[in-house]
Amino acid sequence: MLEESHDGQGFLRKVRAYQSNDFSTNIDFIDYIEVPPGVTIGHHQHANNEEIYFIVEGTGQMGIEDRVLTVESGNVIVNPVYGSHSLINTSQAVMKVFIFQVSK
Image (cartoon, rainbow, N blue to C red; front, side, top):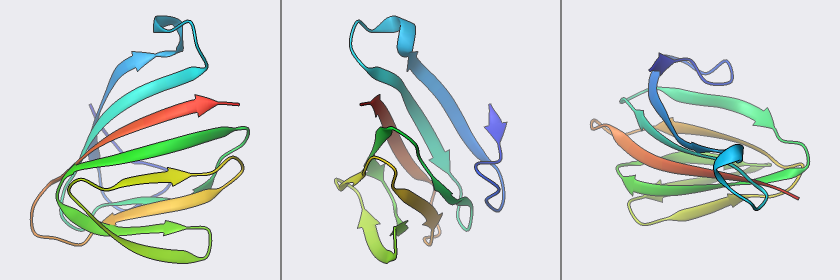
């Protein structure tokens, strides 16, 4: 499914691989996303959960709170409870990412 993400620029492809009722633990969901070049996930804040990004393929920049990190294949980035973050694909290739959200 193509969708905008948190008022970001452009559209990304998202597949919800698993949702909360698939687990007996506090995992809310596991998403697989494909982020085309120049597309962003807008800066947004989370509540009482952590969100973990696993960069499968591609490069970009991730804002975590007031820091900007360069991210690439193999990186795992944790957005802390009540943290804020954003993502932009700065490369010329599609970024492929798994996102895991876990409630506290």
